[in-house]
Image (cartoon, rainbow, N blue to C red):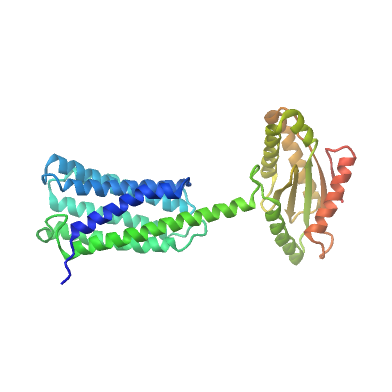
Length: 383
């Protein structure tokens, strides 16, 4: 019969955790908020297991054993809290883990107070750790707010296995104490715990790395669609979305308009006030566009100091109303924020025929914009 050494397996798992806790920050480099929480969670769990193994080197029931064992429970449960927050962020939700945090506090305090009662503290610690994991699994099963990969279900599987094994260990320690007199008892369930902890640690680490990769890919995709300075859509993303919206406009016979805008005397702003002020002017202009846009309006930085807005379900009067709102917003905010008035010239093009394309509408808007600039700037003309 194969002999499984529980202590050797747990020591090996702790060493693997220690290697991962040291190596992950180095190889992952600069990471986002969720990954930082996950890294802290791994470090805390590693510290917890080290403290638990160290406690067995001291006299059982002594103050050192008591302190290290309680510290280990605090670290392991706190590590799960940080991991839970990371999972929430990776699922597109707020950084919150109220239930796991409460359970971690209650479990640690109860464990420290009842340390002299082996049966109670064993059942208490394992049972509440299982409950803590159950809350994390329940959160992972909720529908995420952003598209995520299969790492979520990998975590659900690995955590669920850990939860079941911990719950069984809690029952064994609390009600069948004679069969489970210490942490390293070669009981079948304890052997399963040691084996599953090693395997599930590897699966959980894989899931964390996959989750980090997914978020990095989403961030790259987001950055590929946005202008780095202003946060508005870039031209490529705007053209793609506008083509889709124009096709929908034709299909449902709804009006749609394009507003092409150009900041007045922008080169003069850069030359006399500096490029930093010019950048602030661009950012303020986008803030104004964001503030006055309706749901469904799509705007972008078309290039340099040129911007473009596609107004869905908007007739000429609605486009003119958007233009007026933006001009009023700039009149109220530009002098206060920049120290001078920021103005623009603009051209409007409406969809006139079903065969109109975005390029055709942009050309007409550009012609109108040129006329607005030639007539003295600071005005909007329709093609």
